[in-house]
Image (cartoon, rainbow, N blue to C red; front, side):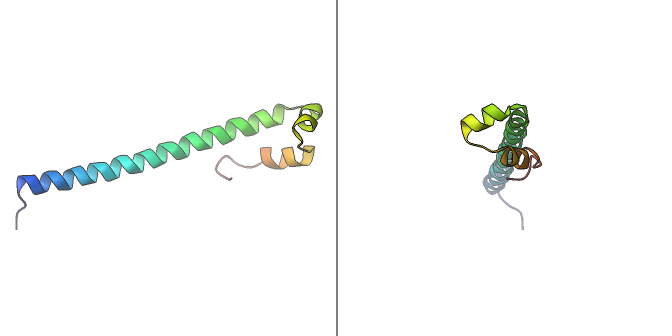
Length: 72
């Protein structure tokens, strides 16, 4: 059984939509990972006084900064 040109076009469009949706999710995940890595790097640079000003202990700062970028 062969599909009509219109049916093949609809299937192709759906596959394209799914692929773009998946790429969008992957892109969003990479953006999130980069944000976490940058914020954790910035956290390592804060002084004890900076941490006190934002209400974060050194141990909390160390624990967060030590996490890999893919962990929440």
